[in-house]
Length: 272
Image (cartoon, rainbow, N blue to C red; front, side, top):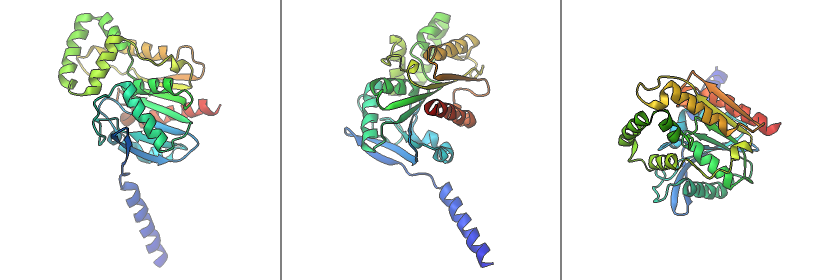
């Protein structure tokens, strides 16, 4: 009886600990306080970059599974997102400089794997280009692509401009959204073709009708999206392109098995 009581108490305490949210830590990166989570352990460190305006909280439902990976995992909120302080400069270069300071400060090591979701895909590509000595692999989940804006305009200029104006009206207060639009206008980022050189996994949604108005969700828009993603790894023998029609842009939360399959694929390339 006593044994069963102790066993039950231990199980309760374990469940309570697992249900308690992991508390964020903070690091001063050049005067900007960044919120981050540090979990798990392993030879490699997985660093997660979120989409526009997103940060640590987005990944909370996935923390128990992320912690089980044979990796140390770092999730952080870029300046102005989550509980991180705002900064005057939130360009790709400035954000990546702050990330570099964070990774150095917490001794993340020189075996970094970068995961970028949506806008975060641009962040990880440019970070890897500047720090090829640190980054050993890339995982791009529905990554933004610098050629998407021009490509949509080529499909139907009037439709694309009308939709861009509608999206701007909804999102223009978000500085990272404005960055993305500038990148679309320039149709270029400084990534030096890094996805052709490093082990890379790309995940693309081919699901139609996520919205009933945006050109990017049309059949032609989705085809362009897939082609741009494929172009990132077209000449890379250590890469794979996973395409799914079972989930939309919100891959990490809507299809977590696919997320962890993609991580397994990247680890396969790293270890073989």
